Amino acid sequence: MRVTVDVTVLADLLRRAAKAEILPRFRRLGQHDVRAKSEATDLVTEADEQAERMIKAEAAQLWPSALFLGEESVAADPDLLGSLEHADLAIVVDPVDGTFNFAAGIPAFGVMASVISAGETIAGIIYDPMGDDWVMAEKGGGAWLRRSDGGGERLSVAAPVGLEHMVGMASTGYLPQEKRAEILGNLAKVRFLTNYRCAAHEYRTFAGGHVHYLMYNKLMPWDHLAGTLISQEAGAYAARFDGSPYLPHHLDGGLLITPDKASWEVLRREVFTV
Image 1: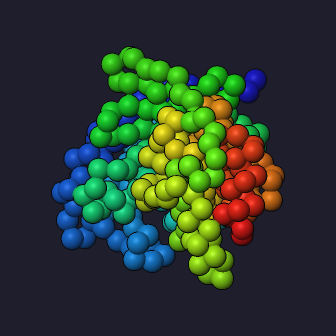
Image 2 (image 1 turned 90 degrees about the vertical axis):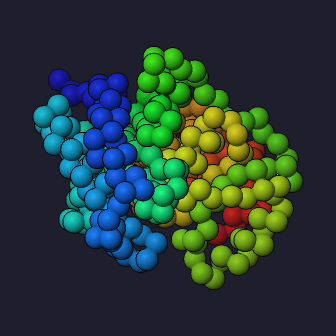
């Protein structure tokens, strides 16, 4: 009998971890509570580590057979990352997405989790601690905004528009150096480009129908699995740069998400010429 994860229970766990370990530290981090990992803008804080520790401990009690893959767990043991492709059931967590913003006192960060079953993303959750609500999806069930008071609404991506009218978000910092200037120049063809430094809020903004594209080059599972499923359940077209589906074990190959396939093809041809 296949073990399943109750997504509402997981969503509540993310909320409780945020209230216990993240929000009390917001704008209250001490000098030794923030550390750089791979570079000066790649940060980890006590909030990241303590929130992940709490989520991991409770998830182990609730779903003991599930592989737990957290951003900070992988930072401590990179070999864990290779386990995802072959796991029957996995829970992937980003305890604080947008750590740079969190450490800078900017209220644009989130807590994300996805559920993987036999190599496929079947559920995604993005919790906003500041707004105290979730954007979430289960495969085949649509994408939803869920509020802590029990209310909510179904989400739908924006209607397609022409290239010159497109407003969207692109993370250009991880593009190949030799292509970055070209693509930044190509982005003059769209109406507007922005970046929140927080995939959680970028995916929420896209799935809510407020922008027309998202582009990422570096694909860590905790950053993109939940948001990609939510976007697809809201009606989006998502694919890697070569047109192949984005799967949980993919770490590269780029990712472009748009309201429909025609928009994807235009952006891939005219802008994201990686």
